[in-house]
Image 1: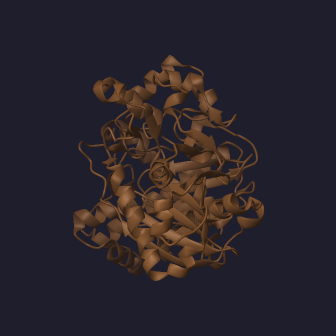
Image 2: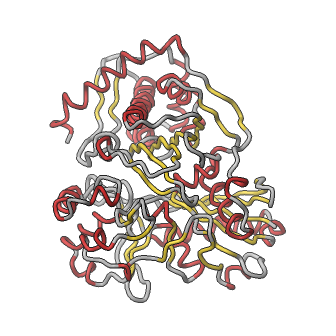
Length: 487
C-alpha cells in the first residue's frame, strides 16, 4: 500500500507518496497562478488554480511513479488556511478567494467583537482580518449581491476535497482558523456564525484530521490507475500538517516555518488561548490535541519582495548576504509588508527600512530582511513564553530553511538548537500523507507521526548573542516609535 499527501499552497501544489512504513517514495509539484492584489493590503486567488495545479502534480506522479501511485489507499490534504471560497447552490465559485494575508476586513473585526463580546472566549483568538469570518462580514457589507448567493463557505483544501470527492468536509485544525469554531468544544459555534449572518447549513461537515472524510471519485481513481475505495482523510491546515510531518504532536514539540508566511508552532495537550499577545490557539489535526502559534505574514515573501525591487534572484541575494555576513548590520527591516498578526495584530502595519546609508548594497538589504523576519519570530517566542508555553524541541521547515544563514540567525536569536529534517520542504505534504495513512488503516497517529531523519542540528552562535540582543532591542523600539507613520 501507498498513501498520497497533497499540499495546496498559494504558489503551487506538492504531491508526495509514502509507503506503509511512512517512507517517501516519490514526489511532484506544479505551480499555481500567483495571487493578485487588486488594492494595497488585498490578496485574492482563483480556487480553480489550486485544482489545476493539484491535477498537474498528481498527473506528474502518475508519469514518474505509476506502480506506486496505483497502490494508493489513502489520501491526505493540507492547505493554506483562512481563505474564503464562496460557493453558490450548485457549488459554483461566486468570487475569487480572499486569502490568509488579505487585510481588508480590519473594520469588520472590530464590529464583530463589539457585536459579540464573548467572541474571544469562544473562538480562543482575536478577530483578525486574516481569518475567514471577517472576510464574509466584509463581503456582506461591500458585495451584498454575492453574499446573498452564498450556499457554502469552504477553505482552500476543502474546495479541492469537494472536487476530488463531491463532499463538503473540513477538519478541526483548518476550521479553527475560521473564527466560527468553538475551539475548546471542537464544533461550530452558532453564536459565532450568527455574527456574520450564517448558520451551520453554510458550513462543511467536521471530522478529525486523521479520520476518514470521503472517498475519491471513481473517475480520478481510474485516471491515476488506482483501484478499490481510496479514503480521503480529514487532513490539516498547512501548519498542523507540517507538525504531523515532522512529528510535533506531543506537548512542547514545535517547529519554526519559513514559508511565504512565518510560524512558530508548539503542540499542547490542552486548549490554552492567549489573545493578549495575538497568539493563535487552534485545534491540532490529532484528536484531543491543540496547538499555539505565533504567526507573521511576510517571511520568505519579504525576500521575494526584495528580489522584485532589486531585480536579483532570491537565491543570489541569500548567497550574497551569507558571503558578507559578520554579525548585525546597520540596516534594520520591519517585515510588515502585508500587515502583521503576532504580536501587533495590525493589518495596516507596513514594512520599513532604517539605518540605510550610501554604502548599503543589496547584500546588506538581504541580511536586514532575514534579520527582520528572525526578530519577528523572536517576538512570537516572547509572547508564547509570556503565556507560560515552553518549547522543548524545535525543527525547521519551509523554503527559507534552505538558507544556512537564516537558520543560524534563528538559532542564535531564539537561543535554542534547531534541527533540520531531511526533505524538510515536504513537511506539509508528508504530514498530509501520514494523515491519509491513519484514515485508511486506522493506525494510531502517535505511532505514525514520528520525527523524520535529521539532516543537521544548528546551534546558537553564542559569540553573537549579546550583539543580537542589542539589535533586537532596537528592532522592538522601532515599531512603537513609527507605528502611526507605517499604519
